[in-house]
Image (cartoon, rainbow, N blue to C red):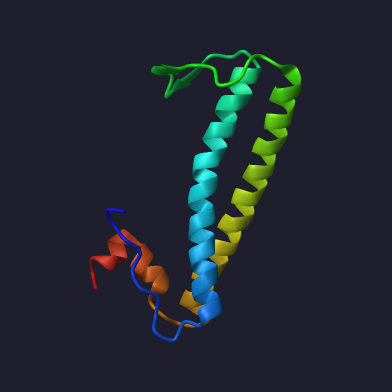
Length: 116
């Protein structure tokens, strides 16, 4: 929110714009969902949960082995989805840099962005 995403190049097709919006949204949703599901796993496994081992959080579900196993499966699935979206996102950035030869990748890199 402090550093908004720069506009895409003018010649970016509508489907690429939609894919970029969707992938960014999905990345943020997954980065929020994974820790929350991890919290459910800890709660269901009756393991105390703390933020950075400093701030204890209450359990969100009662201890239950089945819930812990189900949440662990959801957590793994979210990780696989996050890794997949990340790989596609990186591949798209590299495509913009090496195939389309625009400055999209350079704009993402803070050290190179300041030189422009």
